[in-house]
Image (cartoon, rainbow, N blue to C red; front, side):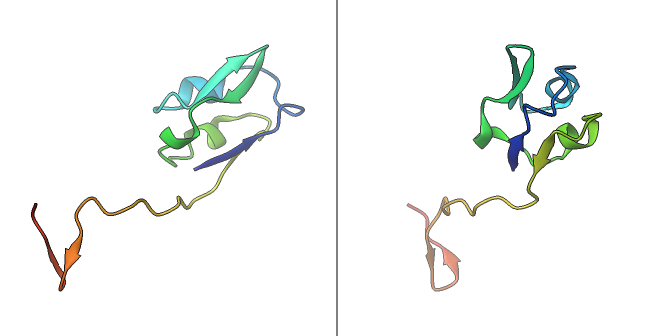
Length: 78
């Protein structure tokens, strides 16, 4: 998940926002800004595309709650 964008280092080129498939990054006041952190796909496109390395992406996401409760190792259908 995207952790941070160092706005002091960001040169405002917008490449990270263009490369982000989830539209997580927007440009604001000529600098990149994390707009929708929870939509991050953790694909590293923004971090790898940034020419000044202002973007930091962490490789792990917090676990999401299970969609279906488990009962004795099997899914319980509602």
